[in-house]
Image (cartoon, rainbow, N blue to C red):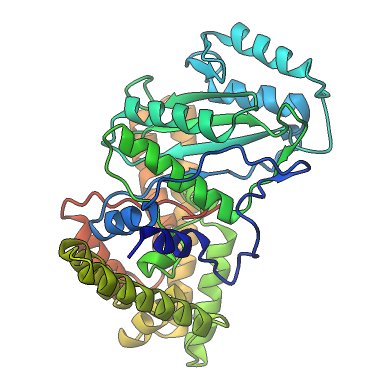
Length: 411
């Protein structure tokens, strides 16, 4: 069995939320295809990697809602962030390494002379984040990002920098590269990435990481039978400040109403989602069968295992799991309402206390109070569901598998 059919299925598989489009259509205008074809067998390679629990690569375009994110002013502000105001080295598409805020500002002025106004109606650059979990060699991530950008964004001006705790105190433990790409290339074509394009970028970045000796996978959540999206990074950031996101409060109130009327939550698209999972599991069966016929018994067993794990993934939504937990534990709507009020009060009180302690110079005590506020903000009003309990037990065991938030990216 040739691997091309697997690649075509793997790359071309579209969920109901993704409109069908030519994968070569990254551009409006000339429609030039800037990148080389993917390596043959990339589909099977990534499926095997997912089955072996290799960490998933992340390619993300974070949402930037600020009105200052457009025009060259937005590019300038973003590169100040990427370079940490000149404290982190920035590399350009020409291979030039920039150190210091003045050098970064000079680069922006060079880009401005390409005809980008100070303020425009549109964003003039894409902020792309390429990331791997803690423990991944940061230099390998940087080198892979450099090679990915050179291949994918040929003809574009871009700059990038690595953020990692090994380079600067206070940076996160997971190595990630911020890549700032001007949306217009030398022909005037404008980058217009969609979800399918982002998925292909993940596959390409994974290729570059493997060339650096890093084990990784690039698959969609559907390929792994994961139906629940990871937590939105905006909500995660709000919780990290010791606050309960309004959306979480709304979900808690909806759960209370469901328990009050004894109506288990439903999901309007759940049948379609389960149908999609069935199609994927069936395809895995066909792939494994053909691999076995060809004598690739090890690969066949790996894909068969992936099929079983995908089919066995939980089918309930988070709301359904929380409803079941509440009902099974005999929790009434009144009790859940009390829990919600206690959560909101506790997170607010300890967050305010942390701020006052910090302002008065009691940093250690402020950190302790803030930790309590964060814990309160992240607490469910029903406690741990059975799935969350299972996941927390699994997390105690060493595992290289990595999951990222789903906002602004595909996975």
